[in-house]
Image (tube, rainbow, N blue to C red; front, side, top):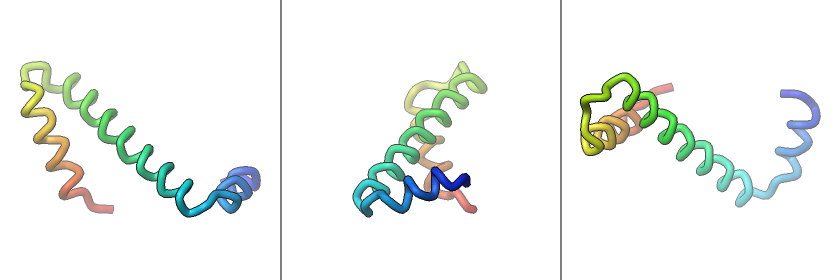
Amino acid sequence: MNPEQIKAFKSMTSAMKLRLAESLYYSARTLKEAGLRAQHPDWSEAQIKQKVREIFLYART
């Protein structure tokens, strides 16, 4: 991270950081859905939603 990013994060409140993390989480889910749709055009919306739930439920770092 560059010094400007560090300064920005240090100036954020805990609530702001939480909102940012939540936004990133939902953006990641949206991108995963789009990727699954592209890889599996034959899947229904229900199948895509279920697979995204599974991926995020069992995700490991």
